[in-house]
Image 1 (tube, helix red, strand yellow):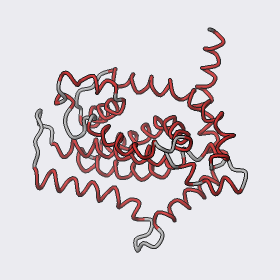
Image 2 (tube, rainbow, N blue to C red; image 1 turned 45 degrees about the horizontal axis):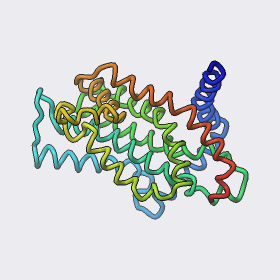
Image 3 (tube, rainbow, N blue to C red; image 1 turned 90 degrees about the horizontal axis):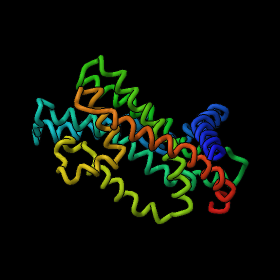
Length: 270
């Protein structure tokens, strides 16, 4: 039993440190891959790199027009719905983008991996660096406009914490997406369902009592509750912190072990 605990703690430590350590050691290669990613996504456009920032900003502008100008939805407790929605929706868009791209990240860069010796462990976290930077900027601006300049640091810190929390999920989904390709067909549906059972389009208390267990099983609901609580001073409790933290600690070690054991077979699948 003691040996199992020691091995698990060692795997957890390696799972927390090694991915970031590898990213630092290969920072020049990572910078080139990020630059390549930006070029691929914006090549041939008039505004170029600016589109990476404009895309989430335009989504927020569209949501604001629909909810504040057209529908004018009100929430109890003097909470402005458009503020509540946007502050929850931006982190959700960030999470959904990272998880969706993680499924195909190994196949996306498969040509590079096949042609040369390549530190494959940096690929699953590659999308995090660019997207976290972009969404942190948009989140900071949005929170500053809605809640005041004092809330900007918390908005930036929110995206950083979510990026760290997503690391084990990025590694897990990258392996699942490579070895079980059918998951890519159902994943958009799963993401949409998760949005519906996360208190973004409604407040947590609006979920019917018999369905409250869904929020308990949904760690993203806890993350959104913490975001609303710290930025908008809505209600939250320690369970909203403990559930995502326990999940992260349970995943980070085993997922790293799974990734390392699957790594020799990645080239075969590609």
